[in-house]
Image (cartoon, rainbow over all chains, first blue to last red; front, side, top):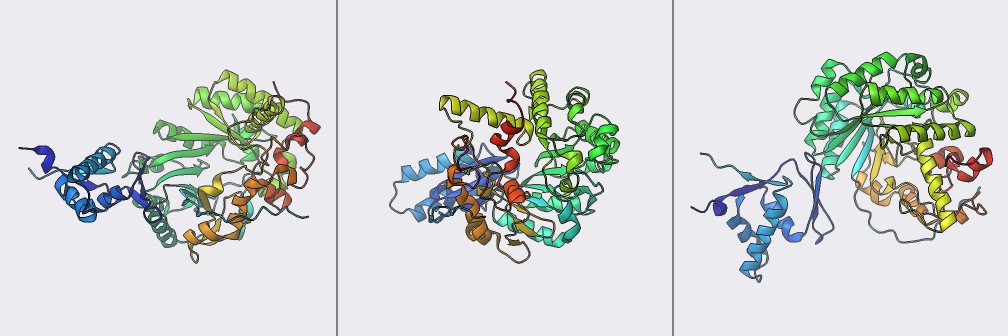
Length: 99
Length: 376
């Protein structure tokens, strides 16, 4: 069983997102830990997708739908980088599946 | 009087404001001798709960990160914790400014509900003396209650900040009040400032305002205390902050090496106008609570985004930072104008009626003319 691929993630509802000028990404702020993170436009797409629980596979599909010409391994890398950047500061969390 | 016009420039879109200072109420149970807000407390009415909650929703929509809640006295509002929960629900952190006298076990326990403790940056209480005999001269009938509130907050391990406002009553009690707060109460640090000539302080100048000689004496005392309690005395304004600023000006004039803490030689003091707004208790939007005479609109009728980006007064305040001190009236021939930044625009406005002037209260030339040299 590949636990990594089946995990679901969701945006922390306590995090605020201030979208910058069009095309310039956004600023995320987690008031619980007073952490700020600037994200680019690609990450902003993923952030919006995480309004609902989503797996890595869902996130890859989201980016593929928006960047049809991008290589799959680059998309995969972007999703991994996004999760690695947002999980530690509690900007997003892993959704626990029912036992 | 004429004010030098800043060079016309096209102002860029300003990054959104991150914090807002909010006077939740004009009601206060004290009548402090130097209250800068005393006139507004009398003149303006309070807003109802729903108006503030709607406003906090607006701040949430704008992704504002933190607010400071002040007054008046915040704990005179019976709906205080309802309002605080409105701040928290809108994804913000907060700081509180209180006189401490209404803080009791029930109020302290309320901070353990939900995310109230987690989201608190600080709670500031003012203590002006080591005894009622001193403290109550500037903050009447409040010492025992303020100290009790302070001890309750300390016991609850909330992030306390104690402010000592230096004035003529407590100048010679500073060593005692520092010992009481840092040793007996066990605070990690305290901050000092001095009473500004605003609000109630205008009527009580004789009692409150330090003379130049007393400012110098305060600097000497604070220097001794800083040596005794390293890193535990902080100041963003008042004698301790002024001494640091003046020392940096002296250093720059002797070595040509300018400080990196601020831009010397232009009216560049105050970064608040690039990151925050303030609201009076009737909803009036102002650049900050010191500039409470510069109305930018009202939260019940005007768009904060539009005010922030477009209001001419804010644009003028932001543009002042390019005005050379050598073009500021009264500073043209000053030997310090290459090293000065004009200090607080709010105080300049209060004293001269023009925020494009230097704040005379912090003027180093005047300080030197009226005193001997700085402490070493």
